[in-house]
Image (cartoon, rainbow, N blue to C red; front, side):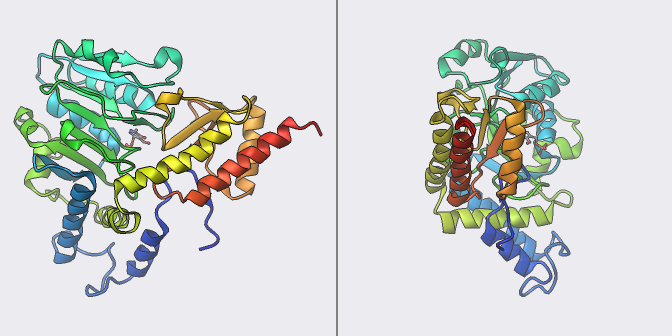
Length: 370
Ligand SMILES: Cc1ncc(COP(=O)(O)O)c(C=O)c1O
């Protein structure tokens, strides 16, 4: 597999090589089944085992308590932007509180406006989304007990991340879009009413979205929702009311198996993620201002590192020359420009090191007059 590039894409993103190799072995004919994972029934014993192991692995990796259900949806995190307020805001007199730390949380809030009243309790917009709020900045907004508090644990485009789960009062469910840092670190699942994540960054391929929902929230769901947009449908039918994304769940199961058995759990994964991100942030901080990191130090994402160069022309050359060196998908999101390196779990240390080395060399060459 020497022809694989070092892929810094934000999602769909690089997957662990042993997982891809397993998929390759299984793709035409699963041992004992004689058919491809693309061809088998979701009602058969093979898939029952797969979805069972996927859930069991998630439960053990994240220490998910029995109070929380794990369900597998489709429609991406974007569908969750609608499902969350349909299930937990529609018909409620209270407003839902949204923390806006970047583009994704802004989108989530806009969708909620269609279902009820919302309140942006903190926004980083005026500063260009360079940080997340401190707990003491959120606390006052909790006094009138919103229907829920929605956060985005990691903003994939701006590269700002909550280093730990913000505190919410016990009677205000915390709801987190954790799409881009899911499984990158241990998380206090018990402290969440609902946590959801599209799989295509850390957990698998596009096509499946994980939702972890606390049981005592289910009675709040209003009757009359479309069946597939009601969390109870997924809970009551083991995520198999209709055909689930079989192949995506199978790959997700392999990724969770890899995390458990090869990486050794989320504490270990977090150590690797710190190590990789430090290499890139050190190259930014050591460049005497040639690279300008976007996020404030305390809010820096371990998953998506974002920065600028002195000019757009230099940014173009950086992306081009990096690609020529096999380091691809480094262009920042079109809405903010600059450079973005996504360093998800499956990015090997050697990949982050290759990028950091390239950054040091590029900066030195640009700063030395020819
Ligand atoms: C934090 C976050 N939320 C939501 C989304 C939207 O996800 P999807 O495309 O799966 O709907 C993304 C996609 O990149 C994301 O990074």
